[in-house]
Amino acid sequence: MREVLIQRAAIALVQVLGLAVWFSMSAVVPSLRAEWGISAGAAVWLTASVQLGFVTGAVGATVLNLADRVRPHVLLACSAALGAVFTLVLGLSVDGLGAAIPLRFLTGVALAGVYPVGMKLMASWSEPRNRGRALGVLIGALTLGSALPHVFGRLPWREVLFAAAALALLGALVALLVVRPGPFLTATTAQLNPRYAVQMFRERGPRLVNLGYFGHMWELYALWTWLPTFLLSSGEPVGVTVFLTMGVAGFAGCLVGGWAADRFGRAPAAVGALTVSGLCCLLSPLAWGTSLLIAFCAVWGASVIADSGVFSASLSEVADPRYVGTALTALTAVGFGLTVVSIQLVPLLADVVTWRYAFLLLVPGPVVGALAMLRTRS
Image 1 (cartoon, helix red, strand yellow):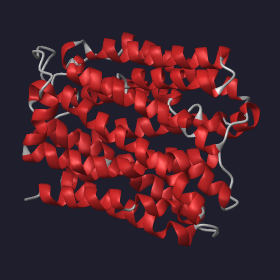
Image 2 (spheres, rainbow, N blue to C red; image 1 turned 45 degrees about the horizontal axis):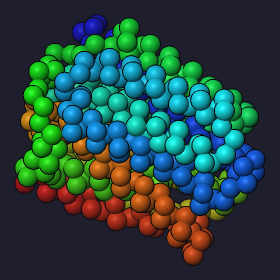
Image 3 (cartoon, helix red, strand yellow; image 1 turned 120 degrees about the vertical axis):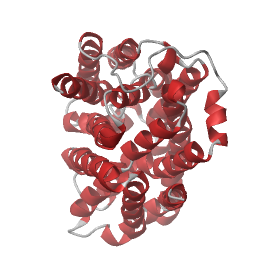
């Protein structure tokens, strides 16, 4: 039991540290817009390029079945280190968007070996009866890591990148020296099978879980990307506020979601979280500009991520045991591809209807996700 707890804690720590580079540029966009003279539309690509890089890396890893053929803790360590290096190079030498976007794309490619591989490792240390809670902790760690750069947001932007890179390098060391695969998933003996990522969609269980996750992802990263702008437009502070409402509240939501998945079942937990976050999307124009906005965003931040670990746990149980890593990587590849679309569309809608109503665009995501997960119960 002691070894299980140590490994779970180490895997979660690697996610917090390794994923600090993900939103490191998004946290300093206001400074960059002034210094580089770029528009809000151009600044979108500082996040969208990471998402596209993640999709590219995840697709490549899926085709090669890397997460099931390479020692996962080594793949995790190398990926976190590469993300740190690309972020460090950007902070040291880049002075414009033209050079920043390729480096952010490469950072996303590297992160495709951090998040999905971390999910497989966490699942490998978790029996099915408590896997929801374990993956809830992992997704909570991802949430904290993604929000962490906002804590450093008042520093000069290069120092924010240096801090994020240092954290990611520390995460790589923890992965290499401490993390090891657990006993509850198939060892890395799978044969090369690029077709499995498509084959799993022919099976009802994996197909519905994937569809639920895609609805969840339509909302999640668009909210994380544009919440600072939404808050600013209503006169609220950002920085620590974003870290508290999305990071800390999100971590708490992941713990509750994981507990609910093990206590009540995967589908009820996912549907509950999707219903709450969907209602937050729908009610966001009413909360905008009121004294309750920060509390409202904390509820939203908790619910929008609470079901992420539920989908991962569900897929790890219904996918072919030989290719769980591949299935999880394919899941995230398509899901993150969708985030690029929603991230791009939100500011376009805001230009037409103002930021007060911009998040109404996200409502269909949780609706579709909830309907898909309801069908898994039958």
